[in-house]
Image (cartoon, rainbow, N blue to C red; front, top):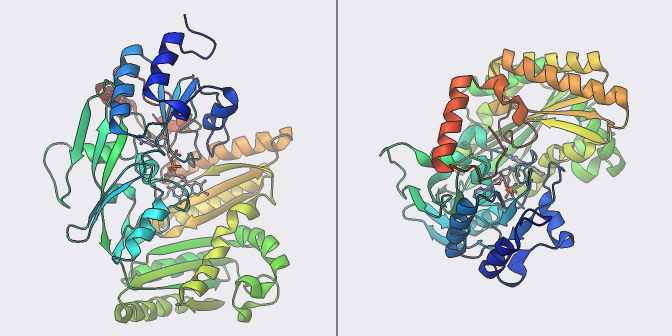
Length: 477
Ligand SMILES: Cc1cc2nc3c(=O)[nH]c(=O)nc-3n(C[C@H](O)[C@H](O)[C@H](O)COP(=O)(O)OP(=O)(O)OC[C@H]3O[C@@H](n4cnc5c(N)ncnc54)[C@H](O)[C@@H]3O)c2cc1C
C-alpha cells in the first residue's frame, strides 16, 4: 500500500537500509529544502537520499527501475528553471556526498572528479600547477562540476573558450537498471562510435546519473586585463564590438550593458559613492559619464607580451568608433572592480519590480541590435521594464522582465511581453536558451523551436536510456 508520501513502507525500509542514518531523510521539515531550486518552484519530495559511493547509486538505480520510482538528481540546485524540483513526486538524490577530486594530471592535461565537486574549488586547485579549466558560470563559487555538466553550463569566458561541453572528455554514469557506462576517454581526440559524452552533457539528469567526469584542462594563461568602455549609443557599442572581432581579436569575454541596465545599476552604485567601485576619473554620480548609453567590458588574456599587443589592437578598434570613455585594468583587483558593475545587475534589477521573468535567449551576433531594439519596443508596448544585458560576445543576451505579480495588469503585460520576445528571437534565427535550458518552467516552449521529428528522436533516445521514465521526469524535452 502506498502511504501518503508515495512510497510504500517496504520501499521506505529499502531506502533506509541502503542509506543509513542521516543519508535517508523523509521528515518534511528535513526534506522541504530539497523540494526547490533557484527557480523558486516547490514540490515536496517523497524522500531524500544522499549516496556517498558508486555501489549505492547502482543499487538505487536498479531498484528504482524495477519499482518504477521517479528519481530526481540534484547538486547545489542553482539551476533557475526548476531542473531539480521533484514535480509529480519521487525521491531526490543529492550528489553532494560524492565530491572528491580524484586526479589532476598536468601531462595529459586531464582531471577526474566526482560530480559534487564545487567548480570554484576545482578551479582554485588548478592554480598552483598552472592549469586551467575555463568554463566559468557566474555561479561557479557554489555550483558543481556535475551540475555544470548536466546543464552544459556556459559563462562569460565562452567567447574564447567555449562551454562545459567542450571540456568534458568522458563520463562514468549509472543507467536506470544499475548498469554502468564509461563514455569517451582521457584523450583529447576520440571519434569512435556515436558521441554519447556530448549527448549526456546538457541532458539535465534525464538519461543517467553521472558518477565521475573526465575533464580537459589547458595551461593557465599567465596574464589578463579588462577594458571598460562607454559609448553614446547602443549602435556605437555594437559597431565597436564588431570592430574588435574584425581586428582579429578573440576576447575571453565581451559583456554589454545598455542604457536601461546602466540606469538600474547606477541606482545602487550612487549611494556607495563613485570611488567605492570605479576609477575616480569617471564622474561624480554613477562611475561613468552621463552621456554613456551603452557600456562594454572586454577581457583579454594570454602571455604578457601577446596580451600587450592584443590590448593595443583592441583599444585601437574601440577608439576607432569614438567612445565617450575607455579605461583599462591590468591588476586583478582593479579588474574585479570593473566586473563588479556586471555582478550588480541582478541585485539592482529588483529595484524595478519584485518579480522577474528571466530569459537567456541567444541570437546570431549580427542580430543582437535588432533583438535589443525589438525587446525595447515590446517593453514600451506592454508598460513593463525589461533589462537586456550580458554575453554580447556570443549573442547570449540575458533578458529580465521586471514586474509585480500581485498587480494583475503588470502580470498580464509581463506574460505577453515574454511570449513576444520568444517569437522575436526565433524570427531572428536565435534560440530560446543559451545556458539555463528549459527544465521544468520553460519546457512548454520546446515546440516553438524544435520540430516534431527531432522531438520524436528525443523521446526515442530517452526511452533507450530510461525505458520506464524514472530519471528526472517532466524536464527539458
Ligand atoms: C547567481 C547564479 C548565476 C548563474 N550563472 C550562470 C552562468 O553564468 N551560466 C550558466 O550556464 N548557468 C548559470 N546559472 C545556472 C546554474 O548555476 C547552472 O545551471 C549550474 O550548472 C547548476 O549547477 P548545480 O550544481 O547547482 O546543479 P543543480 O542545479 O543541482 O542541477 C542542475 C541539473 O543537473 C542535474 N544533475 C545534477 N547532478 C547530476 C548528476 N550527478 N547526474 C545527472 N544529473 C545531475 C539535475 O537533475 C538538474 O537537472 C546561474 C545560477 C545562479 C543562481
